Length: 72
Image 1 (tube, rainbow, N blue to C red):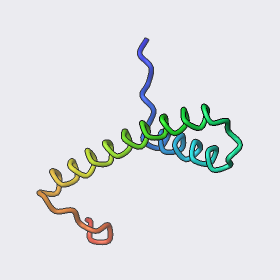
Image 2 (cartoon, rainbow, N blue to C red):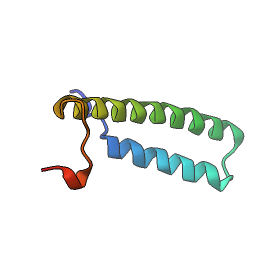
Image 3 (tube, rainbow, N blue to C red):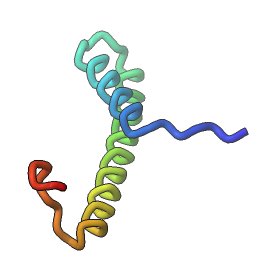
Image 4 (cartoon, helix red, strand yellow):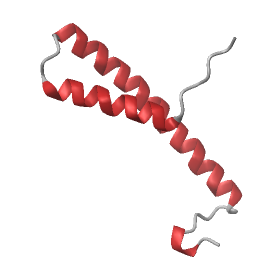
């Protein structure tokens, strides 16, 4: 059975948790490096997903993104 992909929000929460843990400064160096590597992977995935969403919004709006207060 295929595993469900984590949502954007789940990945963002995971990244935030990693950052908090690293900022505490109590992790051994090897764990910090592993957390940093994982954080960079998550950051890349999140950036790619945001870029894809922005591209889709531009396609749907005919190349113009309207401010939320101007949206129908």
